[in-house]
Length: 294
View (cartoon, rainbow, N blue to C red):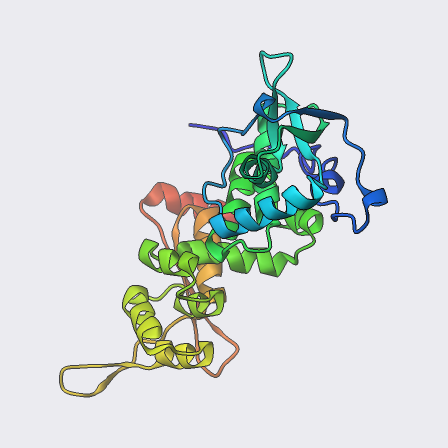
């Protein structure tokens, strides 16, 4: 059985490069950061493990026009290409590198840092998460990668990235939606608010299609999701839809116990019931130990 990733805390991948990667672009010429080197652009290579695969062509053209006029204001973050003395691999700034090629620049300013393969991937994911135009699915996927691959907790990510823990948790819950709904969310056909109303619903895809085709607001989508279905005889089928927080809590408890957990909250009351399904007597013994029994 594979071991879970060991948390490294917030290592160099998050802390040491945050100021470099997210340093605001200067306003005047005198405020330009001083690069370590200016190297031929053909000596700079993209990271093959870069998680960002799509670059907006119009945005690249706009950036290229700016670079043609003012040059590359913010140096790229690079490391020496493994096995080479004269070549460099991009850690952060591939969009500037692509735009510089369009602008026919022969040289490019760089800041050289020492990072191993794991840290380079970690930084690339973080840089993507901080993009202003990132869609909710890619953002949630980035958080999931940082947790699964590097062992970071939601609290650590919230602290380092300047996000609230609830924001990170809510974004990650979106990944529980069906693939087609996630695709519509990534394309902008659904907003994150629309998508959250569908989490945990067994007819999420059908409801998403209605929301898109009718151009419903988030408030209208919430009403649609909560409307009881009609049976063939016209009567309402009273199957309550659980709210996203309850669904997320069910998943967390199921993951921590290794058993199927269902939470049924009694409408209009403070109480309810929690149902735990065990597969065999061995699981029942495990549950008893968790609860402090013999």
